[in-house]
Length: 303
Image 1 (spheres, rainbow, N blue to C red):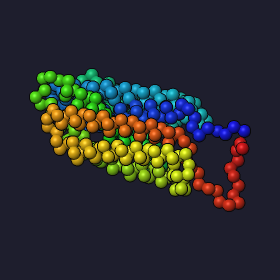
Image 2 (cartoon, helix red, strand yellow):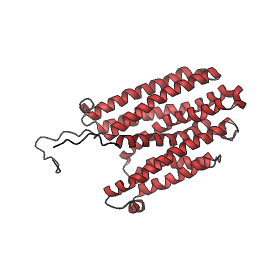
Image 3 (cartoon, rainbow, N blue to C red):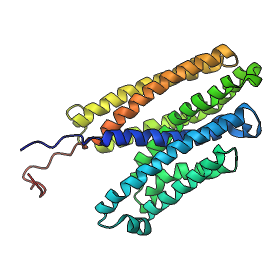
Image 4 (cartoon, rainbow, N blue to C red):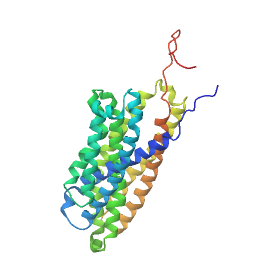
């Protein structure tokens, strides 16, 4: 009898696309509220960067919404109901649908240059991932929180690079202030990155501890091997982030330093993309199962 494959393709690809989409949406709101802060009222670079960030977030949230809709029939089948009935009777699913709509509307308004859309975007983008709290199962929030804080860190860095710093380099009218503008954005982003980085570690270790049962499965199972690869890649991201924070950020203020942070941010994002790929593999693999006590009866099911 042919053994069941460990990974069912294209599940890792779908997971990866979902991660990227969610990170883009979270990065947009992170950039707006951390890097731009109260600078949105200023015209020129900041307004242009905000619109670009909103468009990036809108693309990400739209893809995330499509994946949500595609996954509804499967979720309904697991609950032995229909997709429409699931939306009508399951509070977390209904709340997620509503919050996705709120986020899409908010980002659409923000991308059109209307700052009033950002609060709705913040609520819709962040909270749609945390609707599991409505079930009362607080332990199920560890993975969603891990995603949110990772997205607010890496996603915001991406939007900072392609919307914020890119707008500063593109705008010739503010060329004399380019270094100062980039420094201000990076300094606004840094506290968010530090807090989210610590929460990523805490939530990641909690998740790993819950899934590695027993602990020896870290070095004896495919799940553990993939997790080790992810952890090594994550260490590279943290090292590059620490370099940017301790060595590059203090030098900001001129064009040369702005170019340097632009280059080093690309390296950090490249490593982060590899972490997401490893994560997509990890979540697609079966979690290790604890050994059955001697003499116990195995669960019923196909051989």
